[in-house]
Image (tube, rainbow, N blue to C red):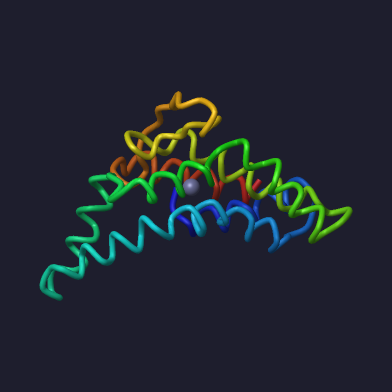
Length: 162
Ligand SMILES: [Zn+2]
């Protein structure tokens, strides 16, 4: 899902599980895309800037919907930050930063991975045990399927309201 969804989902989940809003859970909910998406988005912007300015946005959307990496660095950064194996170092970071609240970082990161599993497909489908195993979990791309996008946003709103 999009990064705004992950940020708000982190807040809603922290409230539901702990009774309080933790911005730190929200932050760690966007870390996989913040770090893992930097090379891909950089190359996407660089590619789109080759078009005349009035076509920048349409080209940016077109390459987003195409869902292809520009190079191996894009893929590596995305896959490694979306690997379930990252939960181990993220928990260590949480322990270092928050001590007894170590689970804050882990919960945010875990919730991001859980949300992304059914909402990505093709090149961006998840490989939970990357780089050890390359099997993929096939979902439906939120950026191409408006129903998936709507279902997840409505589900988050419902979770917030109950
Ligand atoms: Zn993600």
